Length: 342
Image (cartoon, rainbow, N blue to C red; front, side):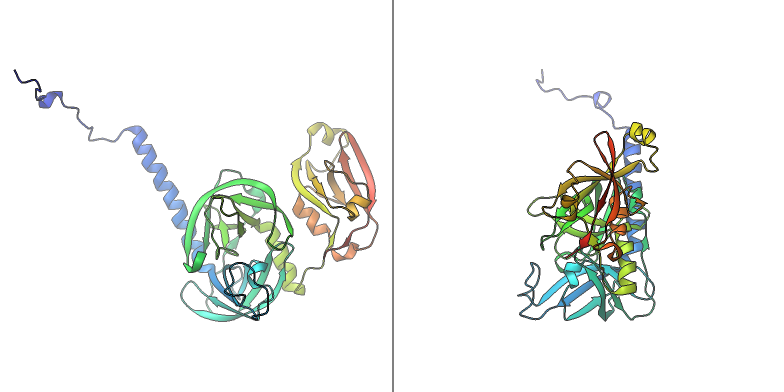
């Protein structure tokens, strides 16, 4: 007797010629994901540029620059007449700027203005037939949603990576020591050279400007919300610089408990939590404490950090300004005198 009998054809397992419902659903999901990414890239890709910045040999030797004289980054054309959003650290103090478009054309660029405080800058080129990206609304972003980054990491032009929104309302310090609030955290892979490129959603709308990656960690990447970028870009295009006041707090967007909203008849349902306080700052001198929630400044509501930043204008530098906050169970009205941001 054969100790290893050969199974008859009837005994062999047969693979169904029809995919299971689960397999078909999985294939459909993959197709939908791929379609979303490719469609978004087709819309935004032509608006993404490579920026080459040249610096004097005795100038800043920030990481990523070639012996202190050269740096590369990315940018986004956001108007048809050649205005480009990028990071301040890509172009700050550059003696010359050159932009390479997605179609291979290149052109000299001029600095319109930059704001190291938010690490944003606007430059401009003079070229015909430009494709502009559509700026979306970063207030609508949700943790877990699909996001796509396009840029030129390490000189590899038009590189696309995808991931999700990992967290919102993060804060981190830049290489210059400045604290940037309310940034988007994503795991869409970024590398040196991605700085200044767009972070986009599945519809092809820009929701952020990529700014930093924490090395050697993986998947810890950050982008400045596009709503902040809109405000900064508009001001730079009008005035060439940002003159702002500051109060010396590190803020975080937080919802307000509904019982406080009802009890105090508040016109907002969110505010800015004071997560940290600078010593000898206007906020410290006004006796603001960590854990307070700022809900109004200068007679205007502050439902989030973007609103607070917009109120910290040059007009209130050195002027006693009314401020309303919640401290535990109390609604407190006080006065703060903002200083000029350094």
